[in-house]
Amino acid sequence: MNIDDAARKLEALGNPTRLQVYRTLVRAGPDGLPVGAIQERLAVPGSTLSHHLQRLVATGLVSQERQATTLICRAEYPAMASLLGFLADECCADAGGTPAVGTNAA
Image (tube, rainbow, N blue to C red; front, top):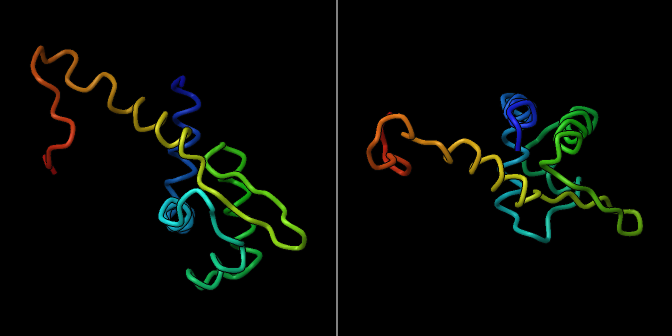
């Protein structure tokens, strides 16, 4: 992953509603959720949800599949793993010590 791709993904997740949508899909597992179920769980208006899903799809964090009349949304786990890896790969590289990944420094 390059820095521009990482920045686009992080920017998409920087919106609270999109982050809620994404976390909901991550929790749903590989089967994903129908758009209606996401809307019901988050109490987000349909047009708003559509806009946020479009942004997540455009960045590659979410995929959509039409099954008859139902639109299924899924978190793209490889994209999530790639983004997390990009953020953690060089953790503490200049410190010369053991990476602090997984610690609660905040």
